[in-house]
Image (cartoon, one colour):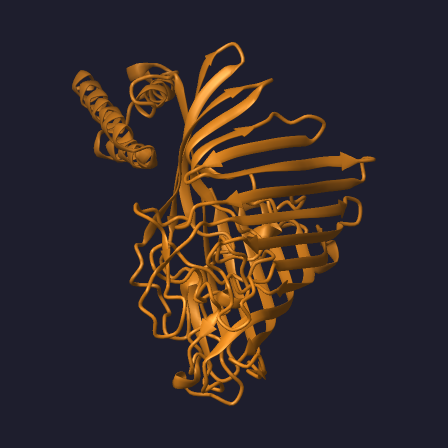
Length: 508
């Protein structure tokens, strides 16, 4: 009977290990399923006695599992290492547009929920190569929600953020190609000195009310809402954001190795966009953490991220017209940031800036006959981040309290999208038809805007679970500058917008 017991036990363990190999080959996500099968096999078969397989049976089994992981997870070889990473960031959003209030459950797109794979392989010497694939969750994205849309159900639930390869030399740097970051991308965020990352909680951009419609004062029903959104008057020219204006594009980029805390990057991207950036991150006098970055990008792609062939066109150049105009794009955009943290006290300061101008050949005001204004924005934040024993939170991790103020000036981004429509809700000639604002019953031209935001935030890091808890209050005020056909100023006062959101991020 003892022999039969042993055979039965070995058969169960062999089946469990075989199941692991099959599942792991299918997806590295399912390694845990294989481990559960081992436990199940151990329950179904009779216990193994010490005399059956010897005292080191568990060690032998663990060695065999490790060997399987080293081969099957990596597609039959152990030459390419694979790292799975990501975050889930969900929040409860309370908003008030001056007349209507509501509560949404959202994916916080200050740093969206996402998962990805990074693969790397050593070629030899100081050379290595690899790839990066990353998928983003778009369900109930905070940047896409509005008074009329609480779940973003019409948008594809998943979005490919990265799909690129790289070749790296430890001393010469790294070349990346595919869908990858431009040098300017995240330059107002990625040299921050906060740990955990407070930029994941809130950043300089307005990503909680981006698609909410502006409400003219005194018009408290749904019909009173403007067709323009907060993003339409608070953005740079190439993006719906105001500070982190660049993105990931198809192209080729070079990233230098770090030298005394400095790193540089440059790249070319479809369709003839190019940019460069310089970043720094270091420690001064064993007491200060310092980070800074500046980036430039020249955008020539008339369709930006939309693609498409043929000659890029714009909307009709005058009200009621049918003729399409053809144009060439030329955006120049700068952005940067600097921040410092005093390690002993946890006190920190952060500031960011953004400039954007348009040289589009068809961007001339319908009444003023002038080109669009230059957009500029700045942001400043002050706070403290440290373990706080007097609150009893030091056992969890670092606690943060901070606040800030930002201004986005002339972020109207008038322009064409290259497919016959508007770039960001405002035509290249700045024309707004009567009724764009319920308080303005005549045709007008928008010539400028101003968006002010101040906020307070709190953040608690939980070391043991890699979880970040946060709560943020924001207050936004906006003004628009309009003129009629006689260049007389047209008043259009707007309601303020208040938002409070609280949630959590779990990293893996």
